[in-house]
Every structure is written in structure tokens, then in C-alpha cells.
Image 1 (cartoon, rainbow, N blue to C red):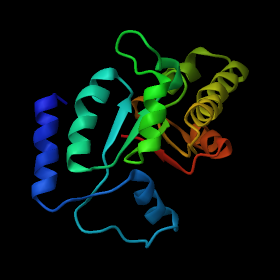
Image 2 (cartoon, rainbow, N blue to C red):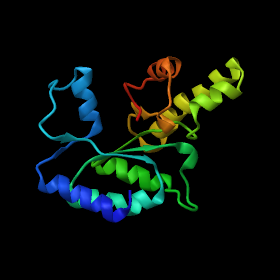
Image 3 (tube, rainbow, N blue to C red):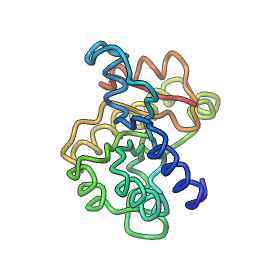
Length: 175
């Protein structure tokens, strides 16, 4: 989304009575932890990957409106160079409370391509790194619980879903 379009979209939500809520609260409603009902005009905002441009352009717009958002990032792309965002910046975002940081796997592969290219044993080993290690690293670096994942490219199957549950994710998202 172009920055100007994103700002226009957020202005629209603000001016037209939308209830922007944390994705974790939406998951609570569907998982039996919340009221079970979403407010009218409920919206959850998510941003995938963790590119610096989203950090520098989208987050200030969200702050302006006090709109919470969930950032799905992958630890293999966190850093100081290029279009990456460093760990200390993510830790500050997590502490701020407006933004929730969750998993987008460890290195953002296409799970279906991995399944076709790797032997079953190697595939399971790599998938455990992508799902389990991502969660562990994010929790260690951010000091927060990570219990949701957005599948890279929206790709998953029942086995991937089962591994996510085993890893401790309570909600998984696709497109």
C-alpha cells in the first residue's frame, strides 16, 4: 500500500466510526476468551514482514489515530542494514502497547515449495525451525508472548497447522 493511500484509509476508518481493535482481541472473541461478539464495524490492522518503510511510514499514521496493529515479522530479517528494523526498535514497539508483534515464520519461506523440495525428515526439521524457533526467538528478544502466526504467502496445510498448535500458537492466519 502506498503511504498516501494508507493514510487515507486510516483517516476513513477514523471518520466513519470503525472500531479498530487488536488482532489478539479478535482472536479472543473467536477462541472463547472474549465476549464472543465483535463490535459493529470491527477492524484489525496487520502489517507483514517488518520492512523499515512500514515502520517509518505506517506506524506514525497508526499512532496519530491511536490505532493498534499487529506486526507479523520474521527473525531472519531483523537487523541494522538496508530495509531492516533492529531488535531494539521492535522491543520498544512491543513495550509501547499499541503494537503487537507476532510471528511470520523464521525466514519467510513458501512452505509448499519446501514440502516439494525436501525429504520428509528434512522438511519437518526445517518447519520446526520456521515455526518453533521463530516463536522462541521473538519471545526472548521482545520479552512478550508470541502466540499468533501469519503463514508466509498464506500457504499452509493441516500438517503445518498441527505443528503451529504444537509450537504454542493459538491463532494462525492466512489470506
